[in-house]
Image (cartoon, helix red, strand yellow):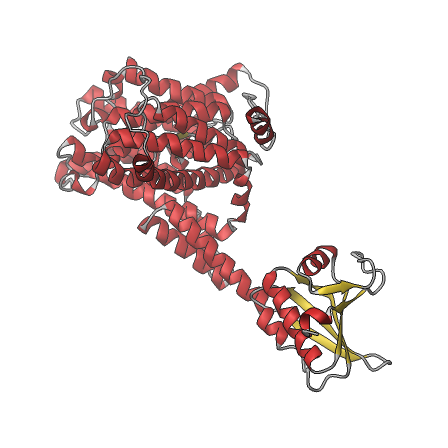
Length: 542
């Protein structure tokens, strides 16, 4: 039984596409681009993972292990080659309360349960519902994300205090002033200039990697005293050890862990699926939503058992990868393996990289991520779309990405419902036989049901009324109730009502509800008029 159930679930997700190069054959040139792109991403992952670990209140290696494991597994199994995953700030801000109240072991347990939930979502193929996110929400999402990335880099323009404080941004010390600020700005500007100029000179080396290398060389050769990666934390460590979370298997422990796991799973999937769509638009790829859910879940289950804080897709690093030429799974795999090598062998070298170089890279990511055309079209698109763009951008900065997307979808859905609610109307005419025909136009659903009832003049109508739905659609239970209400009023007035031209799905809804008696077979092509008479025994109480 269990084996059959597992097989049934497994058949509900698409077969993983594990090809390394989905769009072109693997060549020496392509391999070089992928490896260098992966190296660039790995360098940018180090300070991000360390900072997010501090935000969550855990050791820096917990963030680095998560970046390695989540990045590696999703690169192999994920639904979109080119995406980068790892420890993220959106998840870290949720984890901090759990760690503070119950300790890091409960965090590991929550990460495992989070992964199980995400795998279940993928097996059920619920990832496809990301299609319901409207384009204005996507624009607000990327704009808000760009602002968040920009604001996060400003913490590097402060004098670091303690290691923990440096990861918390505002508590990291006072703002730089005088010569240190000038030097920091100059190095950031140099990094951005190299990234901008490099593609015009050669594409042999990814521009972000060239920017990091040039600025690091300048700082090391001239002995410039600026904040470096090593000032945040010592990243040296061993291979992630297998570790079963030390949490009692009790109902009380589950009640502690489960709410955090559900929230983390939802945030992780929303951010990952939106990143999947964004990367897909840039690379011309489609599909893979459910596969990405399974990959994210599997990665988090493994990470929870190897002392990692869990993670999801990272839009900033994904943009670095795509803009550096990464198009296959090799880049993501290489980034994870490079990151592991930094932890095991190259920590002294990596710790010498100036933070100004990484800030410059992220500033260029901000410029490339922000949808600048959305500012220009604000006055040209419908006002509700412009409002949604601004709302999602603001909520992303104020709260987090997941909340912003949910708010944006809700507002867009309500606006759509209201717009359709005002479209319900009817044309009327009288047949030679004396029957009055109402030709209903527009969708009939919860938002337009009241307007539908108001279309009919029951007292003045003749003894026979025909309601023609050829240009309408019965959508939900509220629509059924509205039809029932109209029919009941005509029945109470002693008049006959017929419903005509219902489509096959509307027919099923109404028949299942027991509202109609079918006089003839449904005609979904509307080649002839098909009438349905109201079951008076139900509506009239006879």
